[in-house]
Length: 137
Image (cartoon, rainbow, N blue to C red; front, side):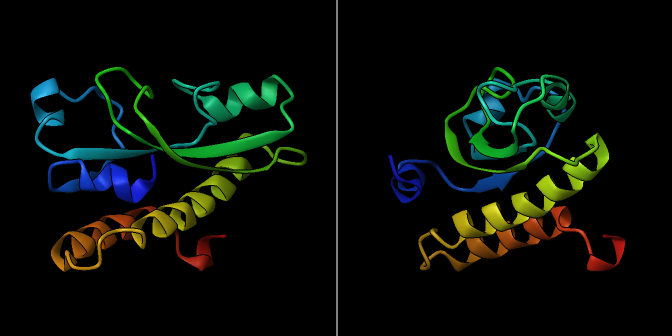
């Protein structure tokens, strides 16, 4: 299913969220919650995905955007991207993946129905929170 087809079948609003607690099913039913996970799902679900991928000497580290579900990291995968693992520490990998996540989320965002500018504006505001100023790189 394409991202646009997925969105058109969902209730409004769409909420980007990054939380470490489960959302109650009744809340999940009121909106589409989209999460950014710094791991290639489904292989690296759960906590410390970058650490585990580096420990397992994976060639690639990735970030996944997925729909939140009742179980952690179990919702429908919307998009993934990756970086080479070689030369990365856990910290540097997270910096690279956060940069990739912002780009990935923006690409998904621009697939939205352009007629819904209020939803698009709210999503853009939430995206601004995850991007880091260049001065911190």
